[in-house]
Amino acid sequence: MTTRQAGRDLDTSKAHSARMYDYFLGGKDHFEIDKEAALVAAKAHPGLPLTARENRAFMHRATRVLAQEHGIRQWLDIGTGIPTEPNLHQVAQSVAVDARVVYADNDPLVLKCAERLMRSTTQGRTAYIEADVTDPDALMTAVQDSEILDFDQPIALSLNALMHFVTDPHDPYAIVRRLLEPLPAGSALAMNHCTPDFDPETWNNVAKAYTGSGTPVQFRSHGDVRRFFDGLDLIEPGICCCHRWRPADPADAEDIADAEISLLAGVGIKR
Image 1 (cartoon, rainbow, N blue to C red):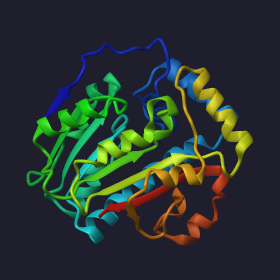
Image 2: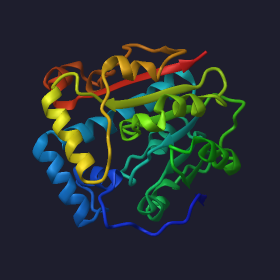
Image 3: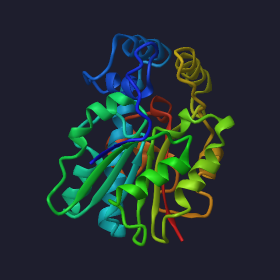
Image 4: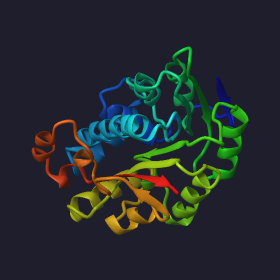
């Protein structure tokens, strides 16, 4: 099932974060302008492709932990990006075949690729909606209208590598509160967010590169990222650089410096 919130043609006049991310992951669903912007950002920090891969790896681990240890069977994944297998629903359904997932993004190219997001198990369900996180009321209305998720049962809200694209004028903390508001107790927030804490000069240059390409970003400190989890119970190990969040092999995490990734991650449970 796909739902278009606001029909739009592809805008190839400026780079888009989802398509730049696709380039960093070695995908093919991007345009030359996205590649050019990605290369400018990578000039500021050549480790951005590694950051992109670690973002995906955290999503996989967080999804498994929520399914295996917390019994969650439903996900709302906002800022989905261009599908790169395994997608979130494939990870969730590898643990629980009846898992349900609603994806949301605001890039029409993601909509064109959404068929890859719909290959659900017969026991589970998936849907894709085109919506903008900066209009959370419309987004949540579209999610509820899709009738995929049961709002009487816990839902995991997945916001990976998204909220640093929501600058302060949009009130990102109010957006996350609005998204969490209708979710019942036992629901979860799983998110990661770029930070300048470990290498301010490099990551400020990365921010300038993104903003200069027409994609404003605002990287935030550990304390500012922690605010997104106010009122939630953080699960171990709390908020840390994403490659250190429950790595499959702790030795692998020790080989990567935090400054190389600079992506803080955490998972919190709603009381």
